[in-house]
Length: 392
Image (cartoon, rainbow, N blue to C red; front, side, top):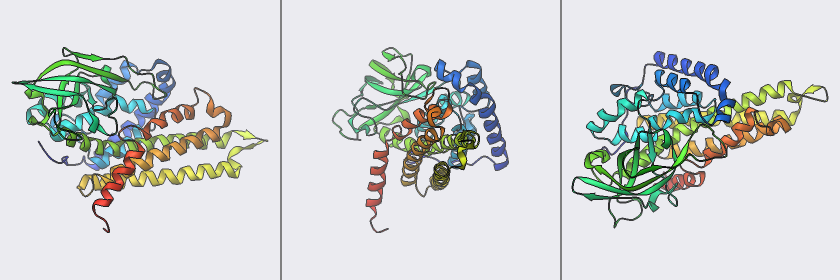
């Protein structure tokens, strides 16, 4: 099993600009017009999902040798800023394939596991889910209770997971479980590939959430689920926690970039409203307090964009794969909350009404400070890393 996420050759800049342009056009012409429909139906139309597959969106971060686009960390962040301009549930359709689930296989899978699964993930033929979080073991998985007991050439998995994105849509689950019953904390955790339709696997109905309609999360239950040793990711035990943390670190970069895209959309909506809505016969954009909110949002947005790109460059060249992702995710998610709040305020009473984009983005924004490591956890990660090398 590899000990560090791999680097890969970036897509040529000219080709990448074509990809960015195509995604930007797709988001604005195909996704934004149906945002309210997705809100009401809590799902995306099948034709849009299929067109997303054809565009390669299920495999942008998977290496080209396995059928993906092979984008590096910086390109991933730049693409995520475009994907974040619409409802964040759109990105969730293929986020697990490219991100936390797919990257476990890209960086830690055996050659056979990569050859079997990555082409299917890249094409969208298979959707993967990342089954880490449990009740009582969320941002800190050290309290994990799901077990995998070895019995000859098989493992028997028992336990449960919650808040698992795309569980109802997935064909394979990346499941984290304790293989050493005597281990505590982060020790003794391994990762397995489990078919969603395997005997003993139960997928609960998708959750009703505050926002992000169209992005489905569910509980998972494992009752005497038997898998072969060939399903042990990397072919060896106790590498699960390291694989999970490495995938989450890159995922935090991606999430910070999605927050930048979300904030840009909210700011654009707010500027347009301030320029046209009137009070006392003049546009509200002429009022200094409204101008102050717009200016503050723009400054914070610029800072978050610069931080995400800088952290992505450090991640890609291997100089920093811990501090940068956590700092970027912390700042960008907190920034998004403030920008969303100002967006509603600028819209006034209209901003509290359903069908108005800033109201929907306001609800969606709240989750970014929680998943893939809460803001509180990011602060701890940053402090602990800094204290390892005091004075440097």
